[in-house]
Structure formats: C-alpha cells, structure tokens
Figure 1 (cartoon, rainbow, N blue to C red):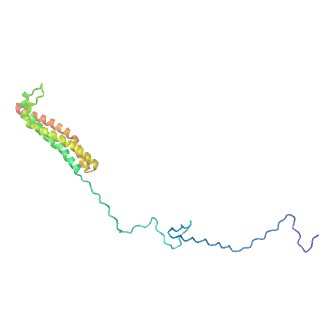
Figure 2: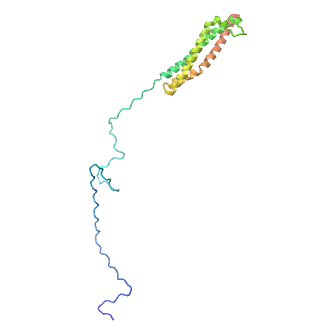
Figure 3: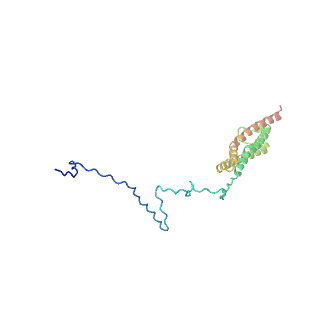
Length: 210
C-alpha cells in the first residue's frame, strides 16, 4: 500500500536518467610559459617547432646576401704564357737535319759521281782500299760533314721536340721538329743516292762522250 501523495516507485532494476551537463563557455587555456632568457655567453634557445614570424617582420633572403653590384673584387692572378722557344729550337734543328744536310750530301754525291768515271780504272774490287777517291776527297769530306751534322741535328730535334710537347712550350713547333728529325735520315739517303746516280751519269757522258 503506497502513499497517494508520493510518486510511484521505479521498477526494479531501472536507473534514473542523468541530467545533462550545464552548457558553459569554454574554459580558457592558461598562456604558454615564456622562454627563459638566455644566460650571458650562451646562444639563445631555438624557437619551438612551428614558430612563424609575425606579419610584417623582415625576412632574410634565401641563399644569403648577394654582393652589391660594382663591389671591389680581388683581381685574378695573370696566367703567364709559356715560352715557345724550346719548340722553335727543335723545329730549326729539324730543318737542318731534313733540308740542309741533304743539300750538302746531294751536292757532294753529285760531284763524287761526276768524278767517278775518271778514276774507275783505279778501283780494286778485291779489297777495301778507298784511295781511288783521292781526286774527289774534298767532295767526300763535304758529304761527311753533311751526314754528321744531319745526324746530330736530327737527334737533338727529336729530343727537344718531345720535351716541348710534354711541357707545352711551343707544342706545334715541337711536333714539326720531331717529325723532321725522324724522317731526316730517309731524306738524306734518298737525296744522296739520286744525286750520286745523276752525277755518275753526267760524268760518264762527259768523259766517254755521248
């Protein structure tokens, strides 16, 4: 038997509803603590990640500051060109070996060949006696001077040409001198043989008649 003035009792096992929470304004968050000032002599602490400069703040250019136009710059050290004298010397020696020496040898060979018909009867084929060349000994001496001078100049041209190429002191001149020094012996003996034959033919024609 219940009291008519009281509300009826809740059924067994039921839970009364929870009243909704009151709607209030958002609770303000406490301000972030300010960074502690750096101690004297120590760098200031880096700002927290996500820090952005305030609007209107000066921003440093990307890549640093460029030097102002027209600023003083230290002059570059002048590059001293290497002297080409070594290559020129090799080229001159090559000319001596490949041109001058063959000319001397050719003149000598022609004169020796021209005089051979007059001494051919004195040639002893059984021995190596060269006394038959006595009438043309001056011409033979001229040919020997040409041969030895060409040999010395050719060897010097080859050596100096290689040095000039390696050290880049007149490289083009050195290459030309090297080539002339190498082919000089071939030129000398070709000219010597040709002029000796021409001289012998001219001497035989003059001695024996046409």
